[in-house]
Length: 456
Image (cartoon, rainbow, N blue to C red; front, side, top):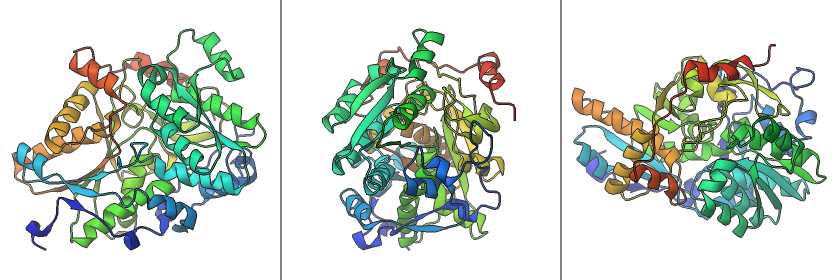
């Protein structure tokens, strides 16, 4: 089809929206290693997981065989308020870069939460409500997940308790207030409200917190409160399943115009956005139908893929959650306080970790000043203020487009724009005022985390 006929924004019709989630594990030759019970070190059963997660979510977490799972009508109805999201051809960016590459981005910021996180939040809230629960607990880092979950819980009239990483709680007060507007209670983590929080504060006075800390507190709060369960915004298999709507819509939009991407790029913290974006394309690669390049982009200050170890580790700092085999920096790793761009988790999705270990995708670590340079460049050219997390993918997409300029290759690049950055202005302010610096942990900085890995 003629390039001139490809619009700036490719929208799907309502009836073209996915009716099922895609489970990439079904097509994986090497399945992700099972979650282990922290007490017995035996694989977690559905019954054991159901003490922490909603029953249906526990079932989805363990399902390695079912390729497609129906999206309940109530969730589809909610999706239609902001989906399908547009696939945008970055014509202006291409022209500015003077690159022969064709650049597309899937924009997930067209909802009040400002990010892709709502895709899984509404699903998890639905299953909690269906089970008859009173409420849920969770953690949040930069605040996108907490914002999305507060919206979803408000929709289903569920109580929502959020433990927010302390440094983000202080740096992002407006995102905190959005959560409270939707009825959530928000507590800076680590806190004095939980036993594990008090322990962490005693061991690390003045700590700025981490997602691992916040997870421990949220899990403790859930299991100690009748009628509550814990929900998580990334990392887990169930979350990647729900986020597959991103990739399914992206593929449908590309197929509509006969476009075949060469390179698919996503930011990587725990893996929800990246896993959701690449899943149907990875499925084709796993089945031998197509061959795409995938690049996971992570912060150099929290380099789980590029410098972590592929090993069993606790998912949380308090070591109360199941053990997962993943690329990890150690559950005790706490990113530097100057790290501004989200993506703060010490580990990575077991599913993505296995795909990476099998050589099916690449990973790249980028420094945050370069990330914010790309964010500002993108905002000025494409007119969207991107979230710092998304800007990691923007950085590498621009780098790859400039490589095409040097070589003359006409590659088609697709990246995920996970959301907007309007609640991240403290980070933008620090960048503009020259107060942002790059921090790359030394091997010595990483050593304590690796030393704490469980010896199995």
